[in-house]
Length: 182
Image (cartoon, rainbow, N blue to C red):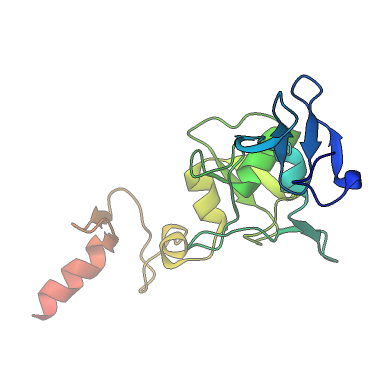
C-alpha cells in the first residue's frame, strides 16, 4: 500500500486531515497517497513545566539540605533557566524560594542558614539585606566591622575613630602615639 515505508505497522493515522503518517520517516502522505519529502511533519513538542524540570535536579542530603545538581556559576551557586534557552537566568535557590514561599524584593538577598551554597531548601533560606547577609559570613571585613576596640585597647567611638581613604577604620589615640615617637 505504501511502498516508501518499511512495514504496515509503522504507518499510523496522521494529524493532518487523517492522512497516513510514516513513523520511520516522520512524513505525511500527500493526496495521492504517496509520501513526499516536502510534507515532513514536525514532532509535537511540549515543554516540561519549569517546576518539574527544577525538581529533577534536586538531591536530598542526610543533613536536610536539598542540593542542586544542575549547572552552577563561578561562585558555586546553582543557576536555573525557568524559560529555557539563554534568557532569564536566575539563581536556583532564589527562584525556588519564590515558587514555594513568596516574592523577594529586589533590594533583599537570600541568606543560606546552612552555609551550603548549592542548597535550595526554602526552610534553609532567610530573606535579609546585603549587610545582614555579610554580617553572618566569616570574612575579614565582617570581623573588623564587629570589633569595638583597637589592637591597643582603645574604644572605637565617634570621637576616637577616623576613616581611611580605603574605607577602613583607624584609632586616633594610636595615631597620636605613632606621631609622638617619630
